Image (cartoon, rainbow, N blue to C red; front, top):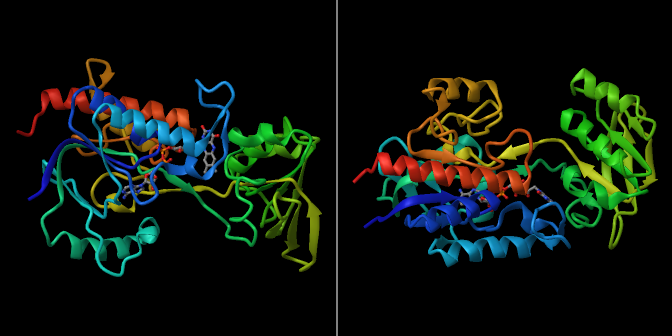
Length: 358
Ligand SMILES: Cc1cc2nc3c(=O)[nH]c(=O)nc-3n(C[C@H](O)[C@H](O)[C@H](O)COP(=O)(O)OP(=O)(O)OC[C@H]3O[C@@H](n4cnc5c(N)ncnc54)[C@H](O)[C@@H]3O)c2cc1C
């Protein structure tokens, strides 16, 4: 028989745990499906210095354990399993956590849409493990990684995926930014406030970033660009010491001194599970009524009631809400994710008061 919950939170980063704190404190039966890598992206970093309340900073994993403990204190049930299939077409919503034999749980978030569909076809033939009155999707996003030698070993030892978070650690250092879009431009400019020099590595001969951002980067005295260049290796033992780059036209390789390497080639929202279930934008982000995109504005307009947007965190499916980096095309910070988690839980609570499925 399926377990019934009032609020099912899928994902266990700052957004999911905050949603759980609010929902369980509001006396709603709340279950967090924490996934096989619970705690989210901050489990892979060291010092977090920009989350309010920690004047000396706090280690990312420690902060996430505290989020989790706070949710448990108010009665949240933690299920350390990955949600492998959902059916959001009828209420109560159906949730499966079955893992078919031979499927590697670590690879579940990398499935292609076709692989996900095949997996679901097997799983949903059986009854779901859980039924839920509301669902809060907070599965996050993961930075796209170039997969160059040295990247994983030197992550948080000079390799960073978040300049807003880490730029201040690179005062007077030699730094590199990989990418050519708006995020890379923003990262380069953020770093230039602190670093001795910023070199942008870009594989093409022109940026795809907006013109205004390009101009700011190209006119900045501390920033230079290596055009038509690929990052081949990040080098160092305990910390990054060098990068090896290659000019695509000449084939010439150089080893350059480096203390920081910022990867800015995009994020991948972890939303394959929700294809065909809710509206996702062209990049896979969940569309809610507060998404800062055209799709979000359209959804918000349709939900205007008396001059206010009803349930801003609601997705295209009534009773399904979303929060955090899987919605947020722009800020992607722990504090913004947590704030959205709070909003999603409050929306779910109010929506439940008016629409109980029982
Ligand atoms: C290296 C690094 C350092 C950072 N440093 C900072 C910093 O100093 N300050 C700051 O503010 N921000 C920082 N960030 C950004 C911050 O981590 C994110 O903005 C924040 O974690 C987003 O929270 P979230 O809850 O939306 O998602 P996430 O943190 O991405 O968490 C989502 C969780 O959902 C789980 N999940 C996914 N699919 C499923 C499923 N099907 N079933 C169950 N669970 C699932 C994932 O495994 C993950 O645990 C950093 C990011 C990185 C990568």
